[in-house]
Image (cartoon, rainbow, N blue to C red; front, side):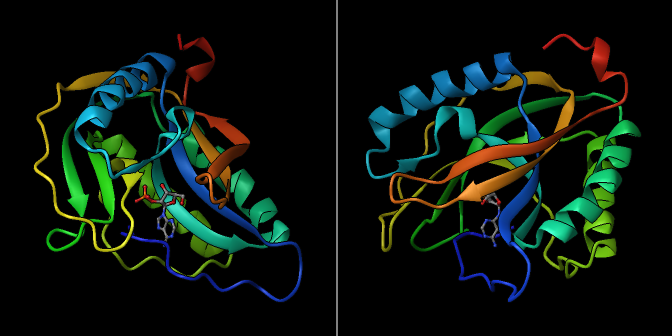
Length: 200
Ligand code: 2AM
């Protein structure tokens, strides 16, 4: 996981897309998080907030990726998702990256069951098999709620009520950076096992 937006290398050939693999939140959990964020906005006035509908749990950031690589990755992601049961998750506990000094990322902790961690490992393996360099940094499940600009003061964070929900799909997203904030668009979604019957 990264605490900022380091420059990413763009492959010379093909049609690279800035992409990542993430768990989409069920509507009720997304609404719960959005309500909590509306409250937080009153306390944390310097944060640039992620759009309500854009909050997600990244499992694997891919960076600039060629269309061919994404096409190779898709079936592996679909397969990995189909092996994973729906995930009962709870979110709560605010934190900042990095751990000290000026904060860059405001996050909400996410408790992911073992099957979710196995899915993350499968996404990692799928990315490597498709030719993406292995991620060496440890995985910390979280929802990024917002970001600070340079040299922000480190604020006291309020307590946040725990919320839970059932995640039933994985998605491959495109990320487009704009001055108004990043725009995340699902390119493909992959249902978790039995998700066709899942209530969203
Ligand atoms: P974040 O949740 O910690 O902000 C799209 O940018 C998604 O990919 C975000 O959720 C972001 O993580 C994640 N991501 C992970 N590593 C990244 C990196 N090196 N650069 C940008 N985004 C990254």
